[in-house]
Image (tube, rainbow, N blue to C red; front, side):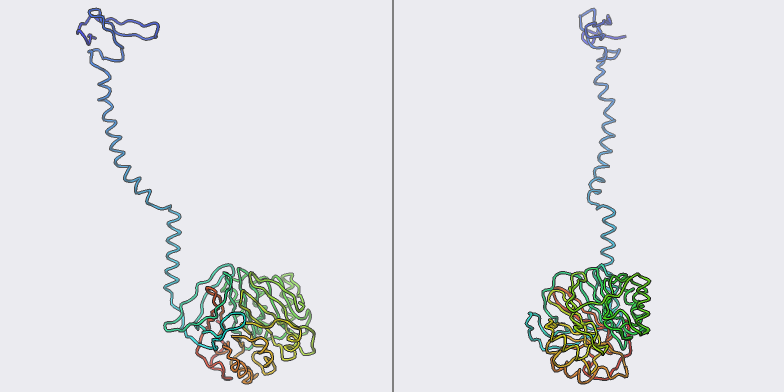
Length: 430
C-alpha cells in the first residue's frame, strides 16, 4: 500500500492532472502530492533506487574503458600495415645490396697526367676495375658493385646534370659494339660480328633493354653489324641509321630482313644531323662525303651529356678523319672510341690532336691476326698521356656518372699492360 512520504499516512489517492495530462498521488491526511513516477508503493524514492540499479552498468563501462584505452594508445604507435611491409622490403633489399660482394676479384689502374682541359674537366683518371654482374634496367637506376679494398680512385670532375647516364663498350672479340643508356632510353652502336649475336642479346636482356631508340650500323662490315640480329631478336628498334640502304654483304641483308619484320626502314643520316637519347645529345659528324673505300664511309658520331662527351668512329681511316676535321666539326671529346680496332690506318696524330681525349677505348679480339691494335697507334695514344682501355685484355668497360664525376670500371685486369701489342686474355663477353 502506498504511504505518504511526509506523514506516513496510508490514506492516499490517485488524482488526475487534466491540464498537464498526467496523474499523481495525493495524501488525504496532510495534503502532500507527488508524481507517481517518483516513489514506489512503499513510499521509497524510486529515483534513488534507479541510480543504484544503473551503478553496475557504469562500473562495467569503466572497466571496458580501462581495458580498451591502453590498446588504443598502442594502435596509434603502429604504422599503416602496408607501409610497414614496404619499409621492411626496402630495408631488406638495401641490406642485401650493400652486403653482396663482387663476383670476381676487383682491380684498379691509374693513368693520365692530371692536367686541366679547356672545358674545365680534369684530364686523367683512375679506372675502377671489377667483375661486373649488374642488371641495369633501361628505365631505372643501377646499384654499383663494391670496389675492391685498397682500390685507388681518381675521377674526371665534371658538372653533369643529375641523370642516369652510362656507356658500355661491350667485349665482342674482333669487332665493335657500344651501348648508350640515358634516362630510360637506349642506343646501340654496332653489334660486333655474327658470332657474337648471342652476346649482344644477352647483354641487352640482362639489363632489360627491350627497346632501342636508335641502332647505329656505322658501316656494313660484318665485324660491326653481324651481331645486330641478336639485338633485334630481343629488342624493338625505333630508328636505324646506316651510311647505306643497300649492300651485297650477307650480314647487311640479314640485318634488313630483321628490320622488315619490325617494319623499320634504314635511314641514311647526314653530317650535322642531331637527335637525343634521353638527356644525351647526339650529333652526326661524318661521313661528310662518300668514298670508294667502305671504311671511310663510316658514321662518325659524338654523344654529349653535360660536360662529358664520347666520340665513335667505326672503321674510319685517316682519309675520313681529315675530311671531318676539315669540315670544321667539333670533334673534341673526353672519351674516344679508337677507330678500326686500333689499326695502323686509323687514329692519326692529327686526329688525336683535334679530339684531345683524356680516355681512349680499343675494341679488338685476342690473337685477331690483323695486328690490332697497332703498336704505332698505341705509342701515339701513350705519347698523348691518354688513359687507355682494351676489351681484349680487360673485358667490357662501363663508364657512368656519379655525383658529377665520370667513373670507369673494367670487367677484369684493370692493371693490364694496355700499351703492349700482345694480348693475354681470351674473349669474355660479360
